[in-house]
Image 1 (cartoon, one colour):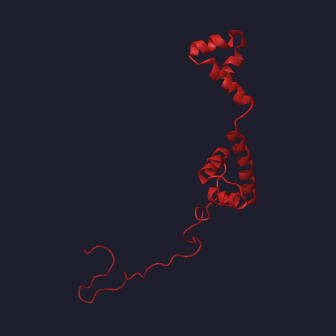
Image 2 (image 1 turned 180 degrees about the horizontal axis):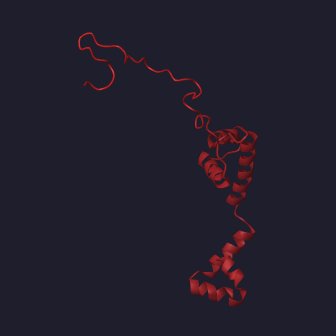
Image 3 (image 1 turned 180 degrees about the vertical axis):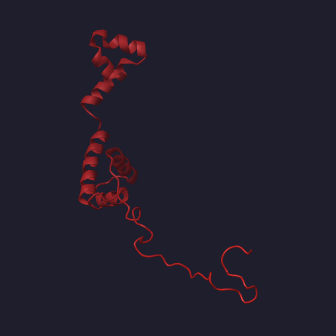
Length: 133
């Protein structure tokens, strides 16, 4: 909204707000919030910086539960979900060691079950592989 008024200063603030049915007090409150953010936004900015620092110190491995635990040990009183939100907004994520693991080693030769195709049954005289003819 404020960008629209900034791009077209010749229109004037009050007529634009009147056309958009927005109270002028709302516009000026938005302007004030741009210049001086509220206490929660300032705290979020500080916590995001500290969260990024803890995440980087871990080598990018720690996710939100561990980052929250580190902050708690350091005496920072913050909720787990707030840490999750700030990390999500900052684009930070932990690495799960199980996610990239392979379940088996593909370089080993597989152990195959024994094949008895050459043996014939004493009763029927047929081999054990393939459909009966």
